[in-house]
Length: 207
Figure 1 (tube, rainbow, N blue to C red):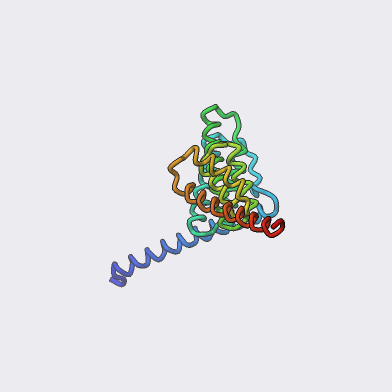
Figure 2 (figure 1 turned 90 degrees about the vertical axis):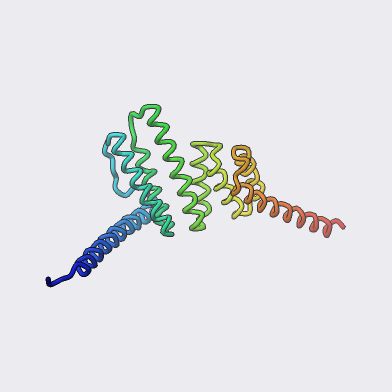
């Protein structure tokens, strides 16, 4: 035998690893193109105007969402946001939907906006994150994740009173949510600190 089994097994493993790396690079390159398209004011660079069957269009949406989730998990937040935007652009291309299908598309869009908001929060693009939260809340005004994400953005923008409003609604919907409770404590601390400063300033001014 010229080559032993361990050698051939290693060669096969190396080839498979290379394939995986090439696939990952191709996905990243596609995501980079999407990110550029979004940055230039467009959402969908493939101009896909085909009237595809609902099932096929949903497959494309979910493929983009899955790739966005992978990119997010790898810390590629910019490219993840662009992939979520691409998935959303495909969501606008459904037609002749039944009420059940409309609800399914609505649920997917809601999830995409919420995920995109988190990607923008990670990128510290707070205005974009705020907009994504608003789009999510247009679809479901009592969605706890969307309310919590928007409150997170408002907290980072130091708009504490507005953050409290969202957190109160989130608490109403999910009284035991630990993340909501934790953020509420942080916001309340900031509100108390702000009030204390205002009182001290008033005392200085008016004695």
